[in-house]
Image (cartoon, rainbow, N blue to C red; front, side, top):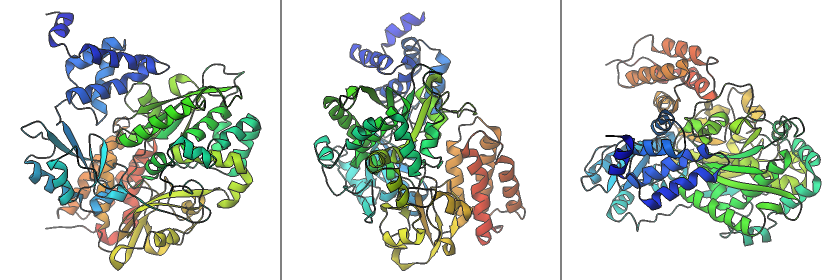
Length: 591
């Protein structure tokens, strides 16, 4: 039977569905950029990606079957086996593991009558354990069809399964900031996500001021502010912008991408910033676009943030209707469109070059620089990738100036930081403090260690940053101070560990995450991460060997510095850091 006859018999899509898929070939500047979203639609319609689906998309996007298949099999959201109508995801990241995700998984198995990865006989439910869902403040967190459903307690699981459509949990997060807070200042206002409320509070005045300043003066203000990349790298924002080649030397399109793919275990601040103040992000994105001469910008948001995606959609519609996005913005001759794009469950997509590969309809394999994205980024064009928190700071810098912002923070880290605090604290949540605030002060704001127990350790910037002992928490929380004590600020994901925790178990949880999320491009990372996990599992099962610690040390040394991206370096560093500071937890365990 010919392929065309086979497609006709299978009729993989209705005429209406074909129109929706075809629309994704026209939504972005380049047709292939719509492939990820088209695959997402197919997954939602069919519950999996079938061979006939891949064949249809191959023709629709005028690409190869191999290209479609590699994307469909790389990203965890896409499956080749059917999932339930209600696809439940249970987080097993570190904060959720500390809160009892293993017991929640057992509860789900009992309630559904199926094992993890299986579908109930009626086809209604399936459940899978997933890596960090960006909801550590609701640990152990669960989602249904990428919609956050809060804490996976036994009662909540029962209510969810009883009536999944009616189940609406409370998703309030603890919020705290001192008098110097910048981004969360108006978060107590429930209508802040609406354009009318945002503008009454000064919203889009920063954009107006930026357009009045002009590009050179705007970039200079951002450089004076000491604003650094708040997604983990800490690179000076103004400095990054200046590496974009001038338009007279490299004419043609240039882009700005808001990195909203927050997938680092322990980090959820962007989720809160995006849902509470979407216009703050959009305004900052427009300011960055103006600064580098971009007429098109994108917000790349992780797929598991479905409600935040809807909030951003609504905010963009408001901004477009008000003439704040599109042509001749504020009558100043500046034009810029903004489009949304969703990821598909891969942590590695949060790395700038892997993010760009994802946007181009490819598997998320990081690129080996140079060139850097600011020279050759999205579709080979100059591209600035900035984090949500970084972009959200820009309106405030434009209004009050770089010197004001710089004075709020530390010597080389201006402004404030928004910290995600989770783990063994009384009040997990989002906390905003000036850069350089001691870590101890942040822990005190979160109520201290739960139930009056003793602090054992803190991971200061997300799972990929190196652990601190309890006697090291007076360190200022800024990029340079944390480097001075052998760790990193990262994305500000503060994870608190009390005296009950065994650090070998923590290391195993983090290394398992990194192994699962390794893209597989670099052999040292791909193989070394699996070896590390296997050795730690053997130790935890009581089958340890006398040379395990030495082997872990050697494996780590053979990965660090021999890979393309920071994920592999993290694989090599994390367990070594735990062993160095808590050797007693890694002594050989034998039955």
